[in-house]
Image 1 (tube, rainbow, N blue to C red):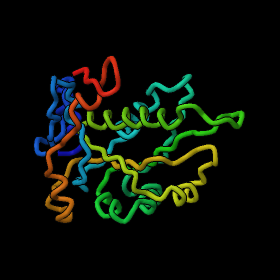
Image 2: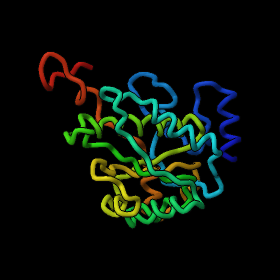
Image 3: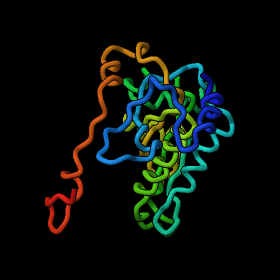
Image 4: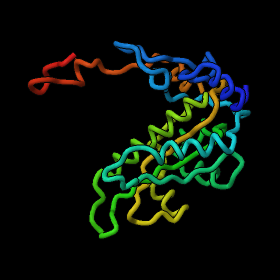
Length: 218
């Protein structure tokens, strides 16, 4: 199924991601969650036949643009390219060896960059936080399009800075692969096991407190 066909399938069921059934690993949540959140995960199996339309590609970054930020400073920036473009290959070259091995079939690659110094030379408050919010918007837009996305810390920041002439007041923070879900059988064996592993999170009792630190709210 092409990305366009997935988007068409999504439109038939408003509010539901349209990725193929075999990609689904819904969150085992304590209460029901919106499908965009419950069905978002970070697969490595990507389909080399899936391409992003111009509209889909633009929508990823339009979604990121509308993320909240401190004082509406919008500290998030992206360098991005689709498979077959020179920018894609240049981003791919900055990835760690392990990440280069599975990201070649991605439909698009991006590097998320946070502004960390303001116009007056002072540290930009919450710049990294703003990039995180924008990148989550980007990822959820991908899910809404029936696509998958995987965010990576495994890339060479210095190489990315040099390759794309990133100014000193900006910090490359994350690499992101976006594409269609592929066959886990095409992955190395060690990654196949990760692909099949159930999703897990700490319980709310360890994350949300009331009255005093460590006293569980839920």
